[in-house]
Length: 123
Image (cartoon, rainbow, N blue to C red):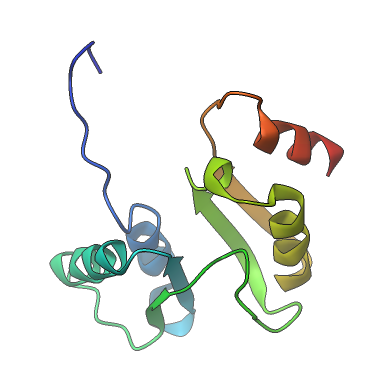
């Protein structure tokens, strides 16, 4: 990117590749707090011609959602961690959702105070 260049956030940025990777035999769940982002993610799935019954996009708070323990193989978080109110609590919740050997994959930009980075380091 160049100075002054605008980049539009793409909803479903990780959802579409995840849905392609698991195919019709896996399961993908996307969550966002914003109704608009949920609709954009659904549109991204449609545009990618992914109509598997195993891909779901929910209007939900990833900090408060209640999923069964050990129900996920991989959890991804794209640029949302710095916006979380309680990063350590969110990470602990996500850890409970992961199956043994599961993976947490995230990208996170640097924010003032580096709250997310400290929480990950304390892990």
